[in-house]
Image 1 (tube, protein in one colour):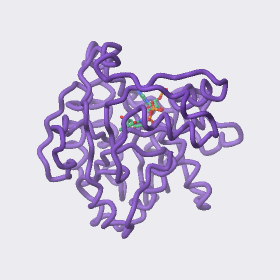
Image 2 (image 1 turned 30 degrees about the horizontal axis):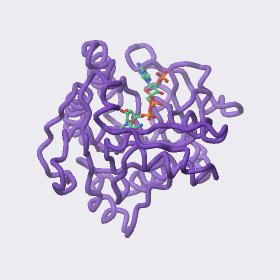
Image 3 (image 1 turned 180 degrees about the horizontal axis):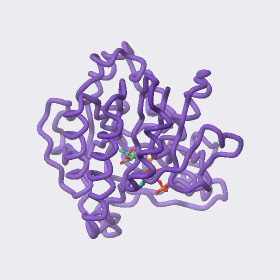
Length: 292
Ligand SMILES: NC(=O)c1ccc[n+]([C@@H]2O[C@H](COP(=O)([O-])OP(=O)(O)OC[C@H]3O[C@@H](n4cnc5c(N)ncnc54)[C@H](OP(=O)(O)O)[C@@H]3O)[C@@H](O)[C@H]2O)c1
């Protein structure tokens, strides 16, 4: 059985890919019943991971079957966590611990972590590998770093995702949809010519994660970076979106990083790029394109 916890943008792509692959036994959780995709009600259930009753009833529903868990539930707004670290810890750490207690019998569990655990690359420095030291520069990265350790201590896998983007499969808009919508209307958009990431699409990320989940558990333990081969600024990603939807790329305009960062409260890395050799070796693949 496959269980997706916190079926948001990324989780809904995993759900869709599992169903397309013909997996019947999939259960996906949302916090808000309004997020259940039309026609898929039977595969979905409501679960707030901070509510012990929800966790107990979810565990009861999954008991007695070999289980693979994809765990996405998180409070991950970087600026919100800066001002509300305790509210974040309740979801990102306390609820995660309670969940792992209830699901210790799972065969495999993949926890959605982030490149932010590494901190920041010095200009021109090599991409971060799984064996490098982690020195997060913001509260989001610090909480994910702590969460990863809890996950690994239970024998499960922390998957460090880079920035992901793509059209939303849910009744809520992603940043991608906002940009694509403006470009389709012929409106210009300004995007940071900075904040370089090994970004990839939600679709590609979901496909890679599912492949990883199909490996024997002893191969996937520990930590895995999941990202594309390249490194892209937000501006470059905006140009890719324009190309993908057939809009005029000239509508995407670069915003200097120094100007853009005034919109943020908390620190963000200027360059944060990961090495994906371990993932490619595990999956025996040569190239990971961003797929945007
Ligand atoms: N997107 C990225 O670029 C990126 C990069 C690296 C890592 N990640 C990690 O990937 C995961 C998924 O991110 P995403 O892009 O798919 O964003 P998302 O749609 O916001 O996914 C997070 C999900 O967690 C749910 N959630 C929050 N609090 C919860 C609670 N108390 N109980 C149950 N569910 C709860 C959210 O539900 P609501 O919608 O109801 O709040 C949402 O469905 C997150 O853990 C994030 O940290 C994302």
